Image 1: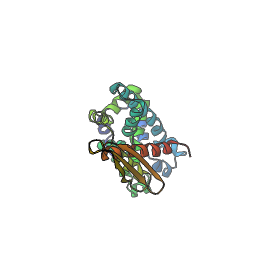
Image 2: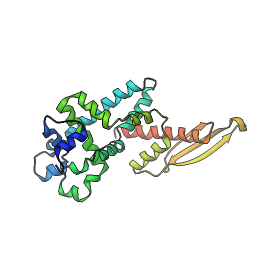
Image 3: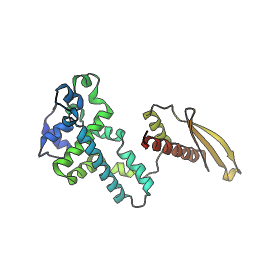
Image 4: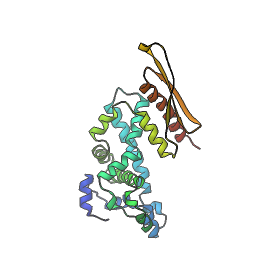
Length: 237
């Protein structure tokens, strides 16, 4: 690895009994392939990433249920999705400065692999899996609470979601055009108007919603379309 193991362990807050797990968590499949280590999935961090994803989901779900007893199942699912998102994990991986420690193949190195968001997010999940195998659920949860779910994250999570921003991010992630909003109608007396707003992505994806303000109607329309796109993403093709 590119830096002292002890320094990285101190940053992570976990001393590995089996340092081979730490090394594997930081090994990209491109390195394993170039070294001819058989099935690269068995020697790279992919299997640990798979495990870490499950551990992260369990711990985040448990903590959200504990700390937000007033929230519905749907709202909890929304918060969980944000907290375990690749974007959020990439930010945390950057704060931990994992990039210099990654073992990459020459091709991946040449294309800036150490800074790639998906690669860093995957490595962070692999680290969670490695910590779980090395010490069990308790140290894995401690790591997640310390580095993934800081108090500020959970405080922000309790606020109402900005579905316009989330729809914009989802559209970008899927390579779709930016959402466009238009006011369809405004009816009723001045003191109690009802606004209808439509949001559209391209020519075939759209949703409408009504509310007592343009802002609220836009947010509701974005929430409806976001839900449809997210459900379509989860559904098997």
